[in-house]
Length: 251
Length: 220
Image (tube, rainbow over all chains, first blue to last red):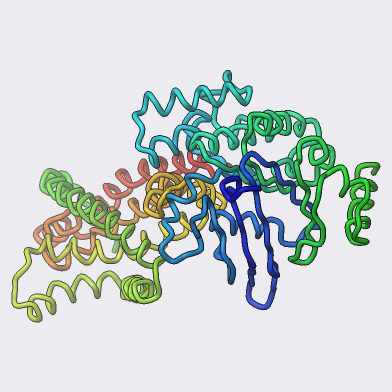
């Protein structure tokens, strides 16, 4: 692995919320084009990690390098940093006062200062790509959760980021809507997008993930190829966690 | 002895009374427009850093808790003395109205802004917006829409509160009424007439506000 291959590197990340120590020294490297799947029990710090990676949260200690630039440094220009890091949220967070097209065109318009025509063309292309070409002028409230989440993915892609962060993006969806969202993510991965995906979808992790990272209590307890980690977890906690997911699926 | 009503005092002076309406409307519109701008600025200050936020809170509590009548008289009598300048009655009337209404509007705007879920801000920051862009493009459009009915309620109460300006000689509806009542010695008829005029004007506005509440019902 050459240095050029590394897109994102987190070193010794810590995050405290008051007395709560949610990240306890995380080291994570993500190579260009790699899909890293982060799994682990709720409250283990997965979401906090993602929010630190685009500085929605300030890490209490440690460094994050993107393209070799330390984005924890005081001098970091956060709006500029975040343009390059797409993020999709568990609860979509679409802008309710804008149409689907408006949501996707908003970044290009306001942040990239593109012309209205160019921004809307880009938004239209992306909405078609996520299978919502017929929902362009619809407000979020009129869309299903799955459709909203696909708009949210398009909104993040509109900034043409180098890396995409997915924070349990299917957890709030009705089961029948999950597949459509995962299909979009799978296609993104096939196109070579670098992705960090926090999820409980083990099938997705196994098929799409290049590497699995297992979280527990704010530390990475295990990482490796999905086939190895899922079939032969070394850590007892990973085994317990995977078993609990299986039970959930059967329930 | 039964009182003998004589409504001619009202009818004969109706035009004179209605003349006062132009100042009632002018004072309401000017105060509301100024208070909307001021109230939004105070709300943003209140939500910003410590020092500015504390100053905004003092402003809000001061003007919310001093009665309007006292405020009007204070601005009319004390302020010119302190400042060494003179204000027209209309100016010294709209200023305290603006101060008082802006304090209430600031709280309304603040509630509107804080009611917008943080997820909205996170999503907007995540696509690379600056804090100012987030406010202008995402938070304020939603917050203002949400508080439009409350703004309407404030407008209706402001419209009626302009009657207090009669005490400092602003020739609005109530002031004209007091003149007519004194001139004709028929205060019962005249003030009843003034009350009916206020009612006829304010009630449709109140209906309009009800309509706003229905139209802008919060949908999550």
